[in-house]
Image (cartoon, rainbow, N blue to C red; front, top):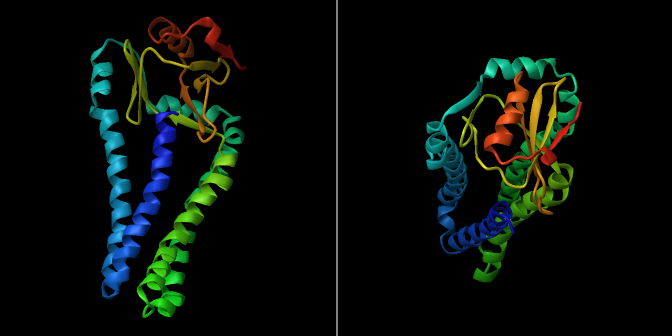
Length: 250
């Protein structure tokens, strides 16, 4: 099981643990409903921000990032070059069409979840607020579990089946002897279980995972550069990529 799959399953379990904890609190101190609900939403926002910040810090100042950046530079590609090539690539919009539609659905789901939570709180919670403790606990548990379960079901059966493939376009990057660095991504050499696709006409290099788990979205990392040939040579010389791993897709 990959690290990504483990993190995904842990996130599923964590949501239900949090639901159980907050339902237990409200069962015995329902008078603090407003405070506990505020803490619930603030906690999720803080966790999201901390996870995002951790990812950025790891990319910019992590041990692997510093190791890569300290090694000799092979080539650097800046944002304006990438954006220019993306603009000229007329096939890119078609490739990203399904990804954009799924991303739009992913953005909509949290609003539906929040709406479900507050609708339940407004119309259903008063029905069990003065009930015996077991009924009250189940009522509060359902208040948290219904939105969480809805979100997880939508993600597992609607989002993920449509999102079997995702393209991550790196807007600015550097190739060093020890790896690839960008403000949003680090890849240390040698690369493992990676095949390379490139286009001399559209001027990009794709890094494609050779294998991906059933629950894992296959993420294709794309690098636009006019010097795609130099990029590929660097992958062969420093990145452990062989000719059998490389495919031209013009």
